[in-house]
Image (cartoon, rainbow, N blue to C red; front, side, top):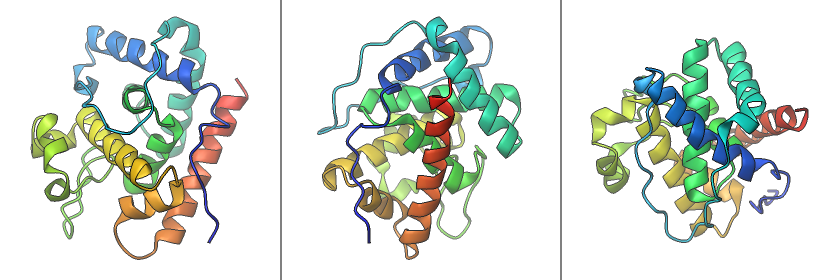
Length: 206
């Protein structure tokens, strides 16, 4: 099994893109897209310090490109794709992790369906969070019903990923295996890595 570690290399655009998300999220809120509003992110012990937000206008092209891409591939309305992208970047910024990792997990877990629920496990929302295993994080964003909202669900999912990366000393493969929590981790990890690679390649062309 190939060991993969999150070092931050290959995502040199992340600090600027992450800061842009925070500004774009505020723009979405004031434009009436309140269904995509973000909850304040709880601190995640052991993760890297977040970067200072940059003006969203300077990175509108990058954020637009990502949301346009996932909207096309996953058949999302434009407003939904923008809201999901902004939420993922903002949550990643708060914890110093790669936003393409957050987006890739959401893509594989739910195909970006905000109201997806697994009747067998109770996993809910974009990041397929199982509330009984993460009650503290779920309560922080407003309780279990909030997991069917874009911002709170991504916020919790990003916090879980960050905690697992810390526990696994930056090993992305092992952190993702813990996130999955069941058999079949190799296939799952490969799917997430392919999605990450696609999004990183997309950002590299801008």
